[in-house]
Image (cartoon, rainbow, N blue to C red; front, side):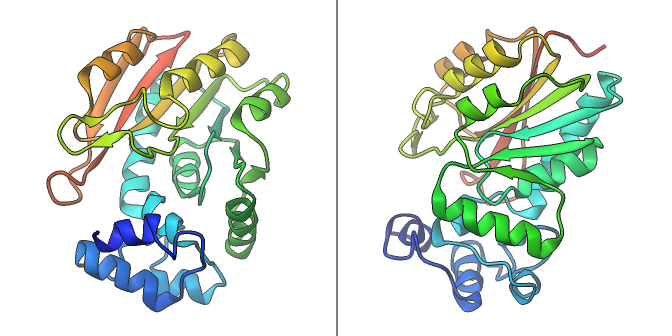
Length: 251
């Protein structure tokens, strides 16, 4: 079992990590003690500010270099929508780092995140407060949270979709979007059923290798989509992004 898998599945999964453990994870897995940089700060900096994370968050969170790239690409498509007051939503918040960067680059007037897990919610709420970040974190499932949003006058809703991958990532066939927890297509269908009257921009986190059938089933739902792979890690360890629209098409 590699060091990152030990953190994800082993005894540290649901425990707070000391700074040395966060840095050791980055050093052993990626050759970089500052790998788990979030909220614009290196680990030693955010730790000094009172930010704390669980072992699984160290593995699962979207670090700054990736979240920044995602945010910039989301902003590019947002500008094509000529949206003056976009609303950014993260359906599976975790650390909410991706939402932070996405809302920042896209100029979102408001950022809302849903997190159902008790421990992750409590830590992320404390972390956002310690960092002074303007994210409306709600202790709720994405299904109920979307329904509870009510009417909004935002002219574009940016929806980040990154459910836990679990066993959806196969070393040979890649990421099967039908096996995430919950399946990505189910998340998209639920979102469009609740918010379909609005212009939507979905930002779905993917892997550099994706099961083609699962990707085709998902993208068939959209009038426009584009994929990007971020060459930030070693081959086989890179994340990507599927951007897709509902109710409009970029000019």
